[in-house]
Length: 218
Image (cartoon, rainbow, N blue to C red; front, side):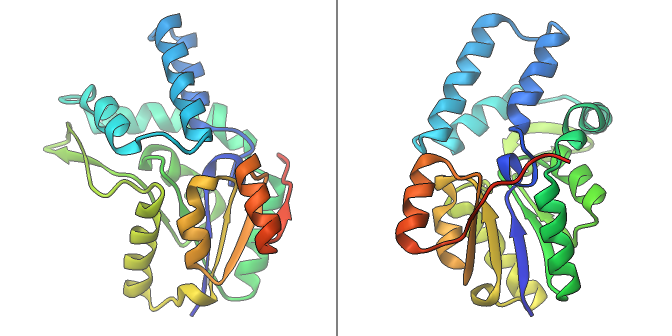
């Protein structure tokens, strides 16, 4: 059996969900200008593939300790409908439809949390979603991230574990992404595909002879 894995930001979506969430918090007056600038600095590090995601994730998630997961789900579902769902790429919808017609399993593979990846997977009717999960105890966040984060080489770990459970052959499978940080997963599957690639990934893709496509919103 084979599968098609899809990254989320700037791949299935034409936007970065993290930046959208920051904009939402800013509109609500819940973060200041300095916090916004700091967050954009982290985003730049991510684009340059130099971000320490484990350290950053733990820092940000630590601030959620004691908060209700149910409240987070309700808030993110409303935010998703307003800020995220309208930015699904038409090319992603078409590619998902092609893989479904071919009988492939279709999976979202993202460093984001379930609070955006779950509703997106539901909208697109995907078979599963693999993402970074936050530890929850008695309905409240503990402030800890479930390791490994679904980022960089961690995506390979998540995908391999899922493939073992489902009988999927990764060497016959596809992975769609925009980011050079996903190089480990691109090299793990048999059919790497680059969507709206960042400059480093675009250069690597051209040298490797990987397909490159540009997807736009619906």
